[in-house]
Length: 234
Picture (cartoon, rainbow, N blue to C red):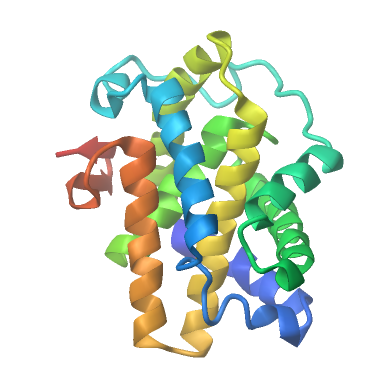
């Protein structure tokens, strides 16, 4: 099974379940909203410093987690927490669109839960959200397919630095929810563009994927590769 197909299936379900008026958000794409983009970038930069300690390449060379089940359970994230974070992300939109944006972000986080289950991720695991965002960003930027095994290796790679960051006081809830929303947003937008192609908006999506890779990994997106060995930084 392709991870790309799994993400696409989740995105298709989401698009089919929201009113037509909301679906238009994903066809144009709102990645060019200056305030939204800067809020996302700020959070990803903080996560980069906390998870990778400023050097993703070095962090990825640490020993990987032995299995997906070894780590303790993650405390559940409440709906109130999701709504607060979604509201902050929506804060950069025009006043008459903020409530709509916030509702859509909450819905996206709910749909991300389906992706967690299909990929065997622990619910609420920030390492899973980071892996999903890196994978979705890579596919958006490089227009590349990823296999399920490749994603599994990526997830294992990220569990070690994320666990270490949590031990050091990493604010995991905000990062986990934001990364999950961004990953689902990338996927939903990409699916919408398949139905209503638009070269300019596709270019915007590609730029967004590249930007998220740059901010979270601290390297240019052209140096990012995901293959049988997982995530590699050239």
